[in-house]
Image (cartoon, rainbow, N blue to C red; front, side, top):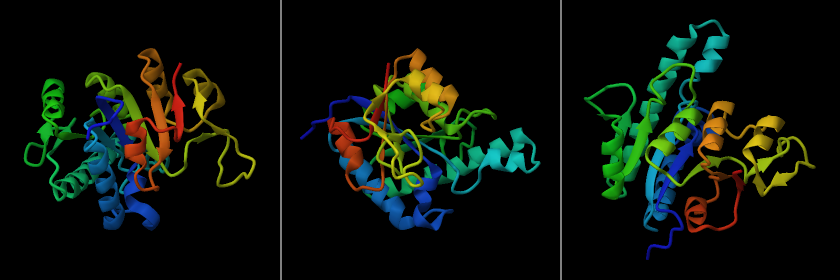
Length: 238
């Protein structure tokens, strides 16, 4: 029975999430767990767009710090997101979910080009749409791509999967007295320099009043809990 409180959402996954404890590459066990969680959430009747990072394969910013041309390294990072997107597509289709990958960089042999109206039509037909290659431009992160795609497809919320159960005032893995926020404003996130999404993505969401919910991906069933409106993680809004 459909009991989602949302009609359409944008799920943002980090590339590192696919690596699991391996630290890099794609851990197939973790991949299948994420796919099953997405299937459970999709069964609630929500339309799901998905953006995945590429940090488990290649990090453009890190490479540029070591002397590589920033634009070239960012394009390599975009290609890494395509690899992750195809892996997710395969895992989801093995669970009999209709899935489409759309890329901001044309590669017609393996995916559709990103076309906003076509993406929305896929979502309306119940397909999961994976947006790959970021925005297609260097100097922009997949966080910014997630905010942009969420607004383009008229998503009601960005749900960002992380390794912790919300937003803290400092790293809870290092500080036992770290304080968790149940709710926080965009301005507070920017002023406090909290590592939720990059400042460009936060600003885009703030300007368009698009809420962001961060939650712990490693706990099975949490994607569906967020979709159902359970009070978990941290919500960022005005």
